[in-house]
Structures are given as structure tokens and as C-alpha cells.
Image (cartoon, rainbow, N blue to C red; front, top):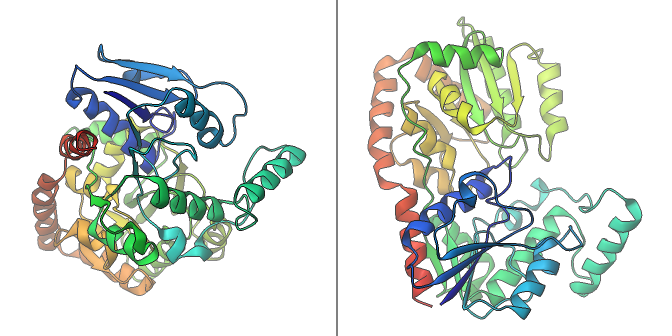
Length: 398
């Protein structure tokens, strides 16, 4: 059997959630796929790092011909049309418009249906305005005028294509299954819940000097609450900053809020809250952080605060638990499902509720220790080897 896998996201240098999912699943599938079968990893550039270390039955195929934009629809479609694999696995919901019947894809969530206002309507594509206009015209023609070339419409169109053409759809929580069935009733019968997991480098770190070294590197000078993810409305970062402002006004302790992650849609609102609340010195924005530094930042935090408005899973929740850092997260959807009883659950629409949870973890050592212990128990349910094993079974059931 010939198995094709889209490794383009796994090969990105600056990975976030979907990219780490793709990377970890592919690394584990290297151990699981039978040596009797052949695997092709498709990518935009040459594979890098550990991803490039391939078993004997794996090979890399770089699809580097133009155009660079819409790589999946142009280049990957062309490749699998002329050299069709028996099974194609896409670890995201953007599948090529030309794909084998035996295609498996991962639809992480459908937040773009539930919260359309939290996604940008700005055109996506090359910086050149003329070329971007051409791409926009092409996309309108491709979708018979129904969709434009912006982030929201590309997500919505891609999800509909995936539901229509994929033989099997992986998602990452029971909550996501319910949402996919809600917006795409025709998907019933081919959606499977395969949980995410966390990297094993997220663990308790006893060397306090090593933690302090990383804190000094990023100018963290006091106790702090930690957040990782895009700084955007979908992640509810504005309400997190509002909650921190409330906490600062009612607590005598010296605390900072450390935000790790790239800017996203709604960053202007976040900047405005920071500036009008005079929090510029207390809110530390780190941007994208190298993966090797994150466990130290997670270990050093008083609490990890993740009051997202919508998640398909929420990997940082279990990463924090694996480090022994207590978690505050949203009291609904996938966040509640993933956290179980091992986190403080809050109304993410209410900054006062988030701030109250911050106070509890600062002031109540017994509660802190209870949540840390419950977190260590909770993470036993998640591992990338288990995730990949389920996916491997789906591949071989085609």
C-alpha cells in the first residue's frame, strides 16, 4: 500500500497548535506504519530536523513548483492526480480539491462557523496587490462566487470540501464532533474522536536557576500568570487582559501577565486595553517563543490562564498540567472536556470571574496543590503514541 501524508504544516519552523499536531502524529506514525507499506511525505520545502529522519519505507517529496500560494489546491492536487496514493492523510481540514477517494483529514474545530465575527475578512494571499486580486478572482470562480479569498471564507470552504470528499474525518474532542454534526449533518457516520496529546518535554523542572535564566531572558521580574496562544479575540485574550487589570486593582502582590504567541485578529483591541489600563509594564508580550523555552516559562508561572472563547481541544491545558502548573480555563466546550475536574473553570465572558480564579490560586495553597495533583492524574489519559495508534488503525481500515 502507498500512503501519502501532507507534511507541509509539520515542517514549518514556527509551529503553533495544528503544526505541532501534524509533527507529532507523523513522528509517531513512523514507528507504527508497517515496513511492508510505502509512505510519501509531501512538503513545500526540504524536510528539516527530526522530521527529515525517515524509516526505510518513508520518502520525502518536495512539491516546489509555482505557484507558492494555495499550495494544497494547486501543487498537492496535481501531484495526487498524477501519482495517486492508495490512502491520503491530511492532518488539517484543508484537503486538495483533487484527492483520492480514500482520504482521511483532521477537522480540528468549526469555530469559524460558530464565531464568524472572530475571523478576519481581510484578503489573504501574496503581498502584490495585482497578484492577490488574481487569486481572489480565481477563488471566486472556483467557488462559483460564494466565497472570497479571506481567512473566514477559506476556512468555511475548506471544511465543506473536506466533509464532502473525505472518506473519514478525525476530530479531537466530543465537543468538536457535536459541532461538526451541528453544522454539517451529512458528516454523521464518518467523524471519529481522536484526542490530542502533549510533548513529553513538558514536565516539572526542579532546577530553579534554569527557570530564572529563562525568566531573565524575557524580562520577567516577578510572579506571573502565563498564557500561550495567538493574541486574538477567538482566544479571548481581551478578557484575559481585562481580568488581569481587575486582579491588579484588588491584590497587593506584585504580579505580571506573560503572553506568549503571535498577534492575531483583534490585536488592536488588546493593545488598547493594555494602554488605557496602564498595564504596559505589567503585561509582557513575548511573541512567538522557541519550543525549548516554553516548559521553563510554564513551570515558573503561578498559574496558566487559558479562558479561550472556542477550542477544538486546547493542548496548552494539558501541557500546563504536565508541568505541575495549576490551570484556569473556560467552563464549557472542549476546555471543560479536556480539563475535567483538574482545573478551575470560569465564565470566560466575565473578566471578574477570571480575576476571582486568579485570586484563589494566589491565596489558597491547599487549592493549588489539589489542582496540581489532579492535573498529574488527568494527563495520564493523553499521549501522542495513543493518538497516532488510533490514526494508524483508521488508515489500515480504509
